[in-house]
Length: 285
Ligand code: C2E
Ligand code: CA
Ligand code: CA
Image 1: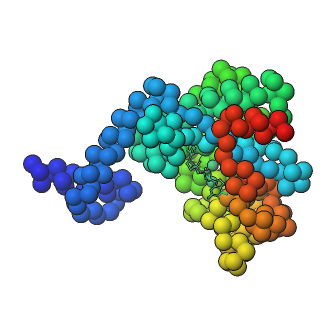
Image 2: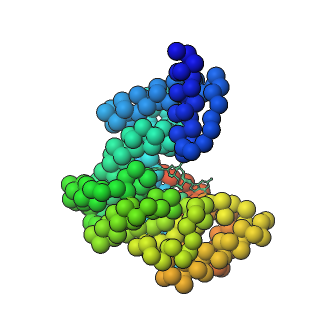
Image 3: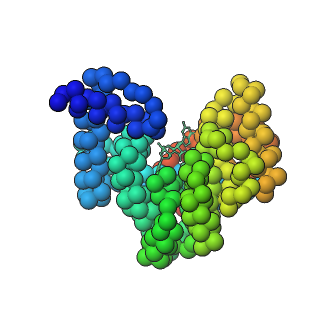
């Protein structure tokens, strides 16, 4: 029975890695499964105990220098581990399906927070939230809409960040079209890391492209990355898309991206993701 169990563990790992592949059992796999099961249970509890908090990172308009957008980024306020980064729990949340509920909490927290900020007279901006692959399916648009009504958030100020891998099948593209028709803005995140071509982009109802950080981080040392960044900006513009450069950390990167026509900048150079409290201070300035 140990043999069968271990074979099963190896099969689970092969599936987890995307399926259609071979995986040999090794001892560490059992530990990983145990860890994942424990983390899943902790995440279930975190949902009930409302331990997820939202941080906000501004997107600055290159022309005006003003904050025109704001990305909501989840953090887990763990009672023992402190603030846990999404990189440590999003993959497990996606595997277990809990991501849908986590994102719903994030969505409601972020929308209510912005409505409150605007109620006290702080400046307007577009709120961007991240979607996960499991979410873009039939019925999602209706659910999002009802959450929106509950928080009284204006639909035209909401932007959904998707990635290339989320729109590989026609049913998710249908749902995306529905979201667009309802009035949600849609932006393509981590652009350049997936498999979609710019030719495919023009058939998607998106209005913004976010150049992935991997093409920004080695500016001005990597000539290839600079060509890629510049090309994405030029071709994005030719498709009437706005361009956001992500992960801007240095003045050299900022100057290059502005010179090449990027519309918005997001990154540590301008601001790290901030707690709601610190973001309110920044908005008041
Ligand atoms: P992302 O959507 O690409 O978000 C940008 C990530 O880059 C954030 O990491 C942000 O803190 C980080 N970042 C921003 N500026 C810089 C910079 O100048 N330098 C560097 N090195 N990093 C920068 P974070 O917050 O750890 O989030 C990681 C990923 O987790 C996100 O990548 C997104 O894919 C996912 N994620 C975060 N929040 C949510 C959420 O609420 N729902 C879902 N489904 N996914 C989320
Ligand atoms: Ca994002
Ligand atoms: Ca990104």
